[in-house]
Length: 90
Image (tube, rainbow, N blue to C red; front, top):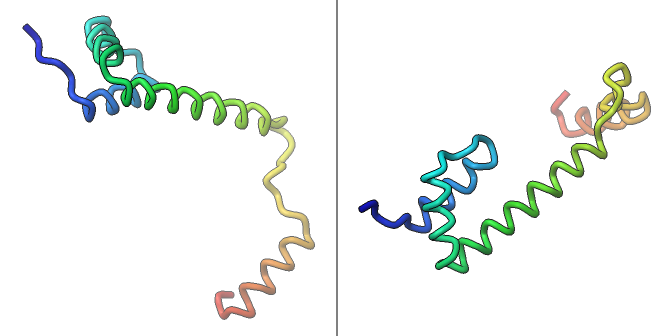
């Protein structure tokens, strides 16, 4: 018989499952633990919400590859340069 997963292992597996699919047996063991452990179940809900928010924000910030929205305006560049110079970093 396979031993039960502990909360530390479950948190690792939940995080890992965001990047790569887990084998079915591990998903089954994880599901069993989540049924019994409300803290790990809450952690799972939290990471799913965070993942959804981050993906939504990334989609909202998605831009046309030909348009560089990360570029600073000349005025912003000048302000940063002045600030760095005043602090001796330039």
